[in-house]
Image (cartoon, rainbow, N blue to C red; front, side, top):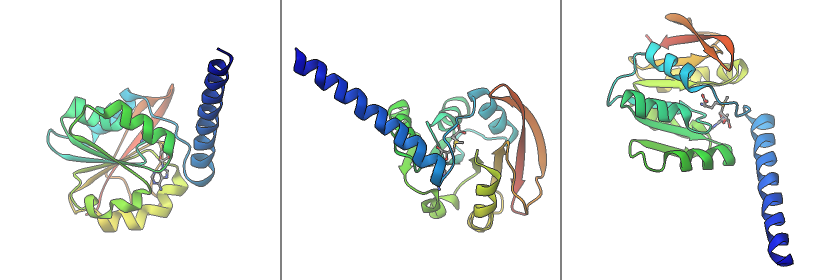
Length: 180
Ligand SMILES: C[S@@+](CC[C@H](N)C(=O)[O-])C[C@H]1O[C@@H](n2cnc3c(N)ncnc32)[C@H](O)[C@@H]1O
């Protein structure tokens, strides 16, 4: 019995270390995995006019909420890229039954090939991260790809439309971009 309790405690401790480590890794080296609320994501994807069977990509897909909204509410084929282990694992668990969701573990810069086929790219990343990836992203998307960002914006490109929604209890802007 004592061994059993000890094993449970070790499991909890390892889980806690994994949770804290994953948060620290994301926050220090990339972007904290704060997930947008599903209703804000829905408003963003509606604003981008995401349609059934279109290809949707979330760069930094976190726990997979945007992928679920895109697949479940819009009937899109959704792909996500996530670099932090814990949100990646959670997103795989949450979406394992959805055939039209694919999630890749690792840096979203691996997505250059699939980006060419994207109809809508969604990003909920910080301004400084958007600034770093702006040239790379706009070089790799097609002329008709719609790019939608929640709360943050690219420094060089002008949005073609701006809307707003409520995210995490705050009024938040949604920016829509297109290459040409
Ligand atoms: C603010 S969260 C957004 C999560 C989700 N897209 C949403 O809207 O709720 C940003 C996510 O991007 C991930 N991320 C940051 N840089 C990344 C990179 N270079 N490659 C893949 N994922 C990255 C972080 O780990 C984090 O989970």
